[in-house]
Image 1 (cartoon, one colour):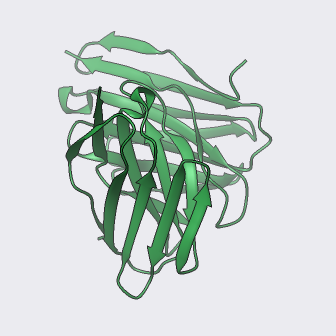
Image 2 (spheres, chains in turn red, blue; image 1 turned 180 degrees about the vertical axis):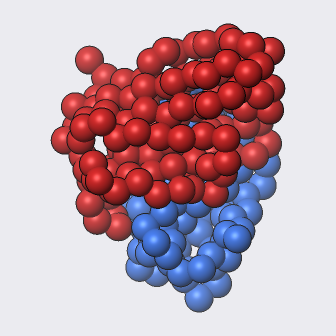
Length: 113
Length: 109
């Protein structure tokens, strides 16, 4: 079983719909992150959380919200989806410490028509 | 903002050595990571540097010069499976990672 699991893996939806992407982990890490990846733009941080009561905005949080339901679960919501939110979304986790690498889920490919 | 530059693409021959460069300008520096990402897949961790110098790990080595804001990843004895994008990421300021756009390496027979 994957240590960082994202659901769904693929989603096609329409403009204006509310969408939730879910992430769960079995690594026991405190820190969780949401990124989006667009061709030519690399990975960009949307939100991150260092524990259940800690939520922080990343560089591109507008139009997104998150919920850290438990240490192991971190979900990303698009309140009213728009076509330029079409992207590959990754969840990642890490242990505490600056030398700890982030471990990524397999990604959710989201298309908004 | 954070600025991390990598060349976009390079082609190399199986068995050869390739060097992938990364230059950065960030508000603070707490370390530099290299990740490998195959098309459509998750990035996977390769190496971490926080002190100047070379870190060697099998066929992969990573070098850091903090004074120059520069790092490189060296891939030796290239294999076809090394065809992937290589991402440079800097850990800065308030415990966040800033990623470069990635360098696509194409290995040819």
